[in-house]
Amino acid sequence: MAKIQRSDIPRPLFEHLLLRVRDRDIDAAAIQSFAALLDTNPEVQTGSWFKRFPSMIVCGDGALIKTFLTPAQAPFGDEL
Image (cartoon, rainbow, N blue to C red):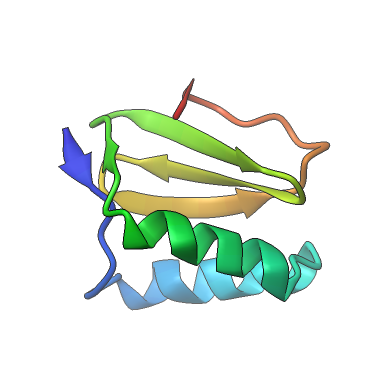
């Protein structure tokens, strides 16, 4: 099991995540909910995973967050 990486995110990935937040109109409340989850230092599997929130889905692969989806989009991997 791995912990979600919270620092030293590769710059292209960080820019991708920011773009997804903007393009998919993810609101501050959703980001705050996600930040609260990160504060618990959750363990994630080494493969693909996702976590549902009311207004977004966070997708990752191992320790890295890979993208943010809208609730209407289909995530890939195992649900946390």
